[in-house]
Length: 181
Image (cartoon, rainbow, N blue to C red; front, side, top):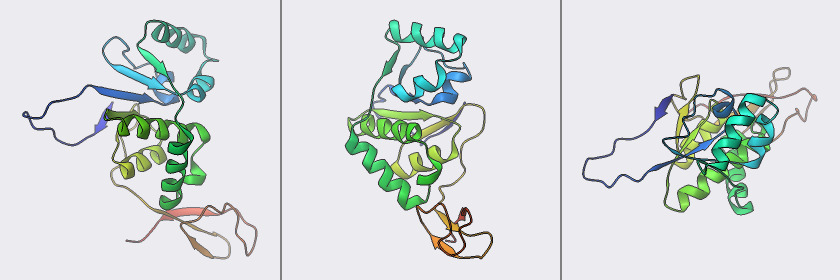
């Protein structure tokens, strides 16, 4: 796992880290539940419980109290959706992705040191925008935060940061690219 984190001085009291897991973290099977605090959402579990080996590991971790399953509040979900709209990531995020970010935000607001374990670059981009650390499972994390703009690959119409999926002028599915700084 590759962590995107800041430096902590030796004088600071280091809080234990709470790891928020997405589906990739559970499917990859590289999570050592015996040493850390973990939390995930019910929607993540519904994505991974079809795999019998993952299901067995997850059920044991839940039964032993090493994996908490929690749903974020609607207020935190709305806050994440608002931030995702500002960065242009919203239409690339699933409801599960938004819930993972909202849960991490909620735990962070409660004073916990939170790190999201995910290979999803949109999750990593939004987490960075919210000041939440991320760790990649298989792939390295993002190198920089990006704000995305939508554009039509056919007629060239530009929409800036937008929640539109289809060009209003020609009806073609929009693409996205990093905004110019």
